[in-house]
Length: 311
Image (cartoon, rainbow, N blue to C red; front, side, top):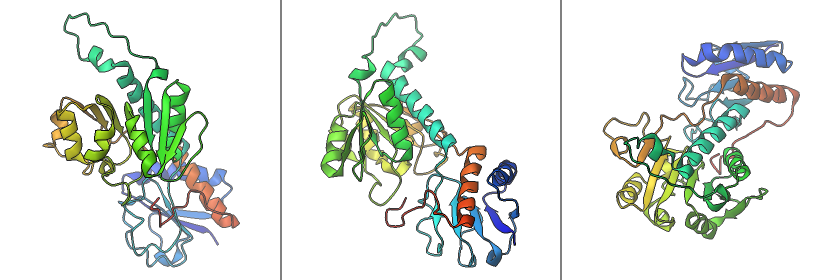
């Protein structure tokens, strides 16, 4: 009997993923399979899905062994009351490396003060020597797969890196903090703050007015994590007051960011269009295929979501 794999994402994703998924399944040794966008729900063994795709009611998928998410974020699906099978989030080499490159690039941009040279070509010779990376304190909020990889890359470049997570972590060369008191210390050290936490009830508006006030005056905020981590009004007020020197934001509560939003016109905000890390079809397909191989072999699935934690 073939393994029936339903691809449940938006129409434009099918031509992007069909070839990579077939190649990955065959390399994983899965030869007898059906990969389709149209399989009777009661015959589906695995759902490869995007949370904004066509499957929103999982009730009919009675024999499905796992839902395999194409995205790292699961906040739009984990609360679905019909989700009765294990859910695996996307943890993918391509996604991780893309995030490392984006975060490292923007941290270096702010550390070196590159904007003044890129946008300040007015004939004035302004010589500014930045500190060395070892003299710059960077805080990473979130030490999961993405946060840990970014923190390690920044540590390798010489930055003084502090990481904070809900549960205590131990990463070589990185000051790891946890808990409420740890968060306060992490913020107080944050000359450059990078947000890579998931969106949960506990993390929404984590960076509110009180948290921002703990940061050093003139600090930088870089958010490629989730838009709702930041209280937008509090951030705008801190930018206007000069307490925060600049915010580079890749994620927002509403996407695309509405045309009239204050972030677009604010001189101390950089908006990027949710490009920090996109799922790569080839590497993501390998992750999906490996989990299907594991399911068929009776082995534990990788990257399962804990419903209690929300990620």
